[in-house]
Image (cartoon, rainbow, N blue to C red; front, top):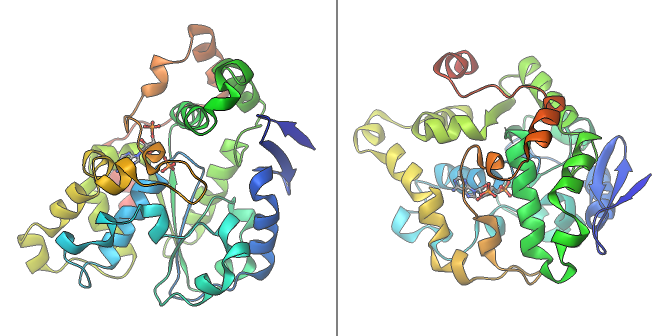
Length: 303
Ligand code: A3P
């Protein structure tokens, strides 16, 4: 089955997941040919759930003894250049990804059930980030608007239509809840392998999660680092305001031709409320309740 989104993008239902036409061959190739290493760090997400932020955070945490923040590669490169996106790029750049030194930090949007076998069976680690589905949807819709203004997305794909499709599960790498629950269940079964994060929790207390990420990745902060405020410095360095205002992200371009700035829009929790009509909000009950970030939830995640 196929659903048209814009002139240039359709979603294909591949193994139960709505994959964009532009990535379909890449996803199949990645599934078949990718060989995970035990040291790999795989960042998984539905697009627009905080991938860019997590790429910057993980890269900075893992490489902190290699690069001081003043000489971080993130000052000259967009997070997406430093953390390759496997679904599309493994097929096109297999040798450069195979040749990366360990630990490799890599990213995919495929659901847990579609991951290459070697990711699941190796000792590689997975970090999953998700976000309130309404904010994710509104963020994705703005992303399309920024990428394809020439297709007058407003006319072709009003938010109402994108919302309607999402209610049927037809959305990028959807259905949303299957994606989220696949990783959630796997994270409960394999807590040492899969770390499950929520965008809203990071917004509430990023320092806590920077520490948690470092612990999970086996590179905890030393007492001395904590005393010197390294955690807070990393959080600040990877903050929305800092990354958005770096020259590379304001003016730099991706190989596909669009600006790096498309990855930095507002970075808020709850922005969907500014765009959804009341009837859409009523219908959004279909998306299910979204747990609020809270101390208890955070604590129970961590234990
Ligand atoms: P909005 O469109 O709501 O602003 P992804 O990286 O998965 O594509 O997600 C993009 C969303 O994350 C966008 O949300 C973007 O603004 C936000 N974002 C990007 N960098 C961020 C950061 N450092 N901190 C918080 N949010 C960030």
